[in-house]
Image 1: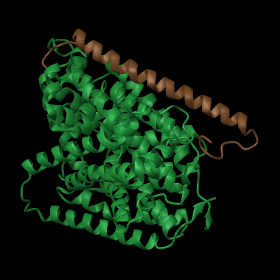
Image 2: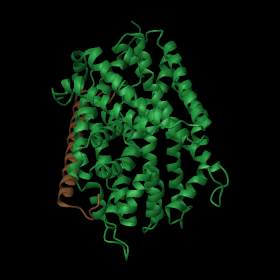
Image 3: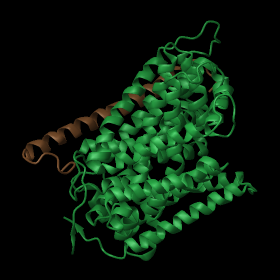
Image 4: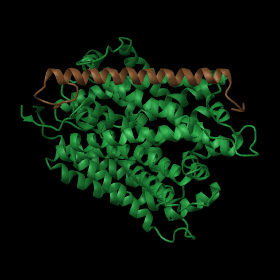
Length: 509
Length: 53
């Protein structure tokens, strides 16, 4: 068997920070508090932590083990890995999902990340200073995105400038490779992200109600909005599905990224402590930091009723409009706003780097070309294929629904079935526990085999029922073109995988 | 939630979640640092070639 050399992580802490950087995204700071508030407040944490134990951690450990196992054979992408677990022609096409999902999400995630960078710049420079209503900031955002031409922006130049800058930063990190690129970047970005979040948490918790504010406009009312428990919600199955969905999405399983990152481990390196550390850092960012900043600030400034409207309006309303209004009213408001959007930018960029790496790995390993060229090719593809997300109305929602939600659930379910049932739990358990630096509870075996797939199937079913209930026929040609684009991407990736896996890459030296 | 303030039960859930997660993070940080120390002692002339090995 041919021996091949692969890049490796230099340190365990570097890998953990890179994995945490992948998991910690905009959803930690914007989606979680809204979900908690809408699903029973503090009581939401019961199904949330149960889901973490039954879905999040088992899948995290399984993905780490699959990645390290696939890395032994030179595979940095899930198509090759699943084919090793289950040597059947179908498995590699299931594995294509683990390349399709991150790449397709990158097509809208990198533009959104670039908006965070742009808004950070706008806040530091006072470009939207004086816009003290959500509607005013909304107009500013729309004109920046090119949907309206007004006194703020008359063209899409700034939009493209910040998009180009974000993509260039992303590619620079990837070109550095695993240890010198992604690991070094994560060791700077993650501590910076946590430091910025802590500054904002302290600032929010020391906010004073404005003169003449209503009695509900206090920090404690904000914390109460998220944390006061409604125990009757525990009997509602939708709350359990929401909690399981939140855990599944926040911990970033089902993407194919954890597999790719852990494929650069040695065959006997630990995955148990790595997975647990990643999950706990993500939970700290989400529950402790994310659960405190945006909603609490919103309640202090707008009150409980208006915050309910903002939360119902979605994460963009909360993150871009409400927070931009709130923070500029504080002392050093432009600085605080700049830090908030820079925090979101760092959270976005660490994830953006991660979601572009699986395709880089496929091109680099499958077609034996240099990393620099592989990164350049992926960069060019993102540049061209992001245009629909920037230009076509409805494209962003379509990409998010099919690739960023539905495909994730399908892939998560498929991989756990292949790992626990086809590869087999005996061998799977050996992979999870080999080199483990903590004791992995034995209860995980039956959980991973029976409970996790069942739980995922219920979430998928619940999501399908909800989506079908809301489904409407679209007459928008841009929506159909986006769907065709996704299909073309999947078929293109499947062809690439077919060619790449014709020759056995051998075992890693 | 309609309550204007943080109720006792809200405090319980908030503190239990924060303290539980913080304790888990501290446990992991301690184990990772110990692991790095062991790795350094095991291979003083081959600094950090593979994570965790």
